[in-house]
Amino acid sequence: MNIDWAALGQVFGVSLVVTVAMVGVFTLGIVGTSAKPSRDAATGAAGTAGGSGVLARSGAYACFALCAAAVAYGIYLIVA
Image (tube, rainbow, N blue to C red; front, side, top):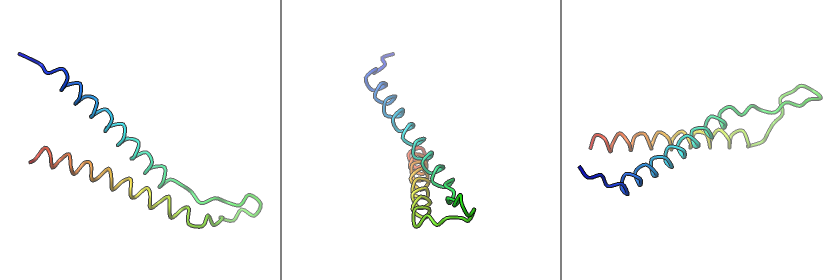
């Protein structure tokens, strides 16, 4: 039995990089959805952060969509 060690190392390297990237993207999505609106310390009222909350949530949804696309592509590769 001959093992192509170069191909095995290449598969290991690519899968390691993709796994770390997907975990990072999912983490960014979690952080984006957990962003709370800032509160004014003096009045206790909820402050308006402008569009930053909406931007964070939109970015989080984009991160989750990227993760879902990667999972769907992986399932496609297995099934096809």
